[in-house]
Every structure is written in C-alpha cells, then in structure tokens.
Amino acid sequence: DLFLSCPAFHESEEAAAIAVSYINAHHPHGYKYALNSIEKIKVLPRRPFGEIFVLELDLLETVCHVVNPLPIENCTVRPPTDHVVEGDCDVKLVKLEGNFSVLSTKCHSTLDSAEDITQICSDCPILALLNDSQVINAVDLALTEYNRGQDGAYVKLLEIGRAQIQHFPDIVSVEFAVVVTNCSAKDAQDHVDDCQLLPTDLAQFGFCNAVVFTKTNITVSCTIYEHQPGVTHHHLTHDHLGGQRPTVVQGFKHHDLRHSHHGSVHDTSESSSAETSVGLKPAIPVVKRAVGTVQDPTVPSHPVGPGPRHPVCPGKIRHFQV
Image 1: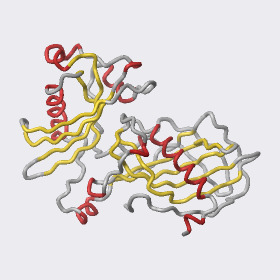
Image 2 (image 1 turned 90 degrees about the vertical axis):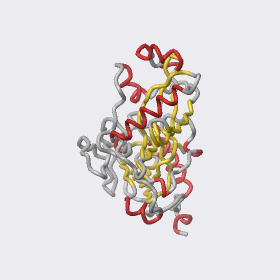
Image 3 (image 1 turned 180 degrees about the horizontal axis):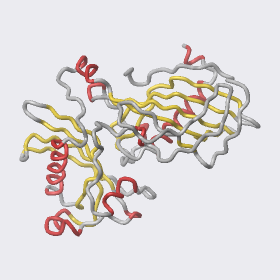
C-alpha cells in the first residue's frame, strides 16, 4: 500500500488533523468539515532547523454547524444522497521540536453535481439557493412554530445553513442556526422588539432542522447548546447588534470554504518546489473558487533548503470518493 509505506505516514496524519482543526476554527459560516483523504504530502527541510509540511487535503462537509461544540471527530459526514459538499485545501505547516503549527491555508469547496445525485437517488432533492423566497419563508414559519411551542428562551435566526425543496407537492427542508435572547418565548409574544441577545460572556447558540409541508403543517426540532466560555461567534451575531435580519448568502447553495478566512497575508517561505501562498483578489461568484491565504503571524517564516525529503504520498479514502 503506497499510503502506508510512505515515510511520512504518521507525521502526515498528525499534520492533517491539526490542519483540519485550524480550518474549522477559521470557518465562520456553515458547517464543519472532516478529513476524507490526504491527496498529497511533501516534506521539506527548513533553515536553520525544523521541517515544512505541504499537504493537499480532500474534506467533506459534516452535519455539525460551526456553532455546534461537538468535536469534529464526533461529527457525521453527510451521505452521498444528501448533496455532498467537498472541500479542497492546500495547507502549509511548520514542524519545530516535534510540534506542528499552521503557516497558511488555501481552500475552496464545491457541491456534488446534480447528475451524480440523480444516478444514486433519482428522488433525492438537491440543495436550493439560500436566498430562495420559499426557503426564507420556511425558516420564518419554522422559527415561529418553535418559539410558540416551547417554554424556554426566545431564539432568533443566526443564519440559514442548508435547504432543499421537493416539488409536487412542495416540501421545504431547512437547517438553520439560532441565537438565544434575554426574553422568554412567552414574553416575546408581546415585546419581541425588546428582546436582545445575551451578553457576550453568556452567549448561547443552537441549531434547528425543520420540514415545512404547509403553513400549518410544520415539523421543527432545535438543539440549544450550553454556553461555551470564550465562544462568541461575533461574525454571526454582528448583524443582530443593530436589530437587522441576518444576511442571507446571495445566489449560493452553501457557505463556501473560501469565506473561511478574512485578510490575506503573504507567506514568504520559499522552497525548491516554488511553494508560495499568494493572497487572491476579492470573491467572484463562480462555482469553484480559491481562497486567499491565511498565515499565522505568530509563526516566523524562514527560507527552506533543497527538497523534498519525502516523495509525494497519495492517501486512503476515509469516507467515499466524490
């Protein structure tokens, strides 16, 4: 097995795990991603000491939204029938004194084609646009239904995660994240405009799944997570600070990994393979796009010597080939 015989096997597994954790930590919208395979790995010597690991990773979207505190190891990868989203990432790490640190990442994500889904499940609906009027209406109905039927705190919409529309008859399935307010669901019936988000040090989030058949036939279930110290998801709650409706992704069916990182810092590392990470121009609405580089400013970048020391090593598929 070429993967098992690769000299950097154990190191590549460790590096990939750290890279995936880093990518998820810097992905502010949508869902967490799990490692599917290590496509390639190169290990290069670094002057005056250490090594540079350059990895190409194939990731798959999980059912865990970014507000879900569940570790990625416990998150379920979406099955092929659930319109898979695949992530492709180039990651550069430095290994110093046995410890890995991420230098830079560059990712993009794409949906599985409608044709591929039809081949394995002719009746399975594909993802709908997140700003589709039917989707937005379904989320509004589901959220109202949830708040009306529970005795806990009143929750507001944080973002729409995914949506699928099945026709004849129209059935809309939606997934969305919510944020807890300082009102009870009962109090909100009369004073909803006075309901504010909890203070940052008490912030609480949740996630809902709903199926809307008609205005009066709605199935909705929500999980409200315990407060996670130090976790604010400021990027998601920002819209609510001014009492505005959360921004809905315009013209897209999923939250692309290219939106994971903000700001592009050039990586000055050099190698014989001309591995450099370059910040790209702002987003252009196309199907498959690259993300600007993100570099950890706490890790210095030094020129590296000739390499690579190890050959390119293809990896095993952990879940399924897309």
